[in-house]
Length: 237
Image (cartoon, rainbow, N blue to C red; front, side, top):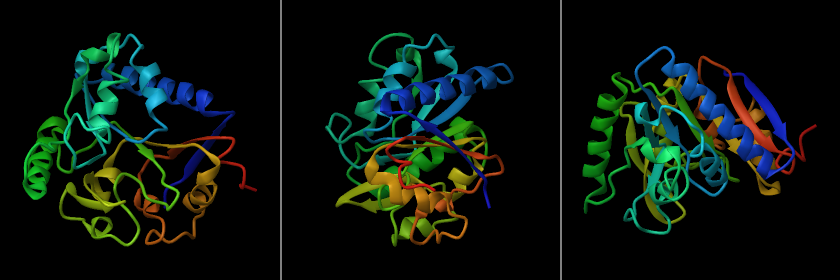
């Protein structure tokens, strides 16, 4: 069972700043040892402020491979697209625009075929099987989901592929599977808002059932970092 390091920040602004600093540090330390670094980003509203800050950091962005941990199966210019959000924040201007972004393919008419395309490209980009990311950034839904691994869905049970089709909130999704999330060298959860109090408590509970809280499926060799604002931590003892 993984250990969690909970770091409580005063508010969303402090959370975004600490998250950007954490990601930048991983990039610097990894590139001091290897030619490239692979990072899987989270979608959603919480990390967007982080990406704006991160994109201003003067890093060796041309050696950074950015991918999404999950993506809604919508066109790349759709308002719900995580890729669009990353391009409009981290890559909008400044040094971050030079990162190597590998969006999830959502331009085909067949989600299964696009899953296969992304599955194949992951191994090529990461150079390993299973793909080993240097950092995976994850969110936490109020229902306990992470990436697009929602409670009670088939995606939570996939162990023989790196990518699968997720189901959540009425939109098809493409998501990394538990084996890839668990293979990451480092995992960081970003948790913000009063509405996440119950989910955060369940994530940190050693006895919590992953069937109810799929975020508990993420079990890594290294300690998992949880960056949470004061509002999300309000119900913790």
